[in-house]
Amino acid sequence: MVQCKAWILRGLLALLWVLPAWTNTMSERCTALHTVKDQLNLTLRRRYLKQNFPINYTIQVPYEEVFRLHNISKLNKTEENVQVEHLQHLWLIVAKAGIKRILRVLPERHPTRKRYLTQLENLFRLYEQRFGTGISEEDDYPDIINDILERIGNQNFERWRSVTPKSLIDNCYRTMHCLFKECFSTEGDNYDYCDLYHWRKRKGTTPQPT
Ligand SMILES: *[C@@H]1O[C@H](CO)[C@@H](O)[C@H](O)[C@H]1NC(C)=O
Ligand SMILES: *[C@@H]1O[C@H](CO)[C@@H](O)[C@H](O)[C@H]1NC(C)=O
Ligand SMILES: *[C@@H]1O[C@H](CO)[C@@H](O)[C@H](O)[C@H]1NC(C)=O
Ligand SMILES: *[C@@H]1O[C@H](CO)[C@@H](O)[C@H](O)[C@H]1NC(C)=O
Image 1: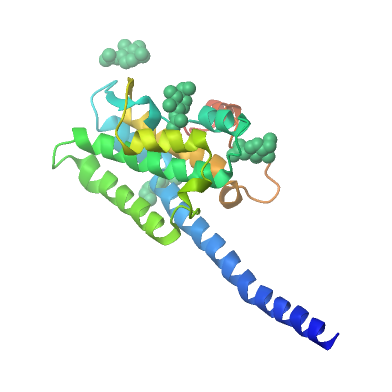
Image 2 (image 1 turned 60 degrees about the vertical axis):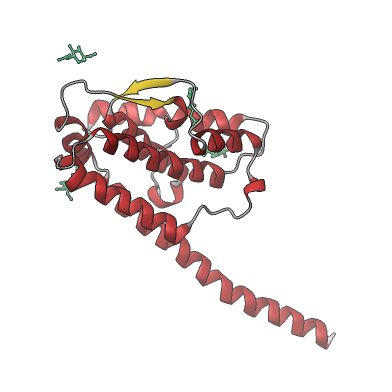
């Protein structure tokens, strides 16, 4: 009996030790994501990803590097056990790939490179160093996610499409809100960031994401 109590006590102590660490990491992660969010605000996206480019300028990206809200709902609905952490990882990989695609077409001295994308790329790198992928074992990924990651990693692409630089980063912004809801919803708001309608609606009223 005494021993049992000792175990419970030890368990409690361990819990008290672990809990604050966990909540700290969570809010640190949210802080980092809010920095990313500020860097992705609409003014900056418009200036650096649209106005700094010729009208209707597009770049070629593989289909796998287009990750939209629709992809999230589709992957979430599959029979495979897709967790939000898997999708968060995919989000990060695609975001980094998108920045690289845009950088690739920019001259060395282009203001979007120097004043914007280089910093953005750094933010993502720091984020990844600090928070990793959130999942340790490669095997833990469901096949459907693994297949996508593999195609991206091996540069094994079959189909390409034209997208505007801004639309790539707009998607990054929206899917971030959907996948890290706990960082972006405030008490009492009932936004569903995963719902495209939410973004469409806001587009009509305030000059929010397009
Ligand atoms: C976006 O960020 C820039 C630079 O921090 C700031 O000047 C601008 O007001 C922000 N725009 C919005 C819509 O928050
Ligand atoms: C840009 O695209 C829009 C919509 O597709 C089109 O209406 C417009 O004429 C295009 N502008 C130029 C300069 O090509
Ligand atoms: C997102 O969906 C589109 C269209 O269904 C698909 O081509 C693309 O590969 C998907 N992206 C990812 C990262 O799965
Ligand atoms: C995935 O689906 C579950 C169950 O329908 C839902 O609770 C969850 O919010 C969805 N996740 C995302 C990221 O859409």
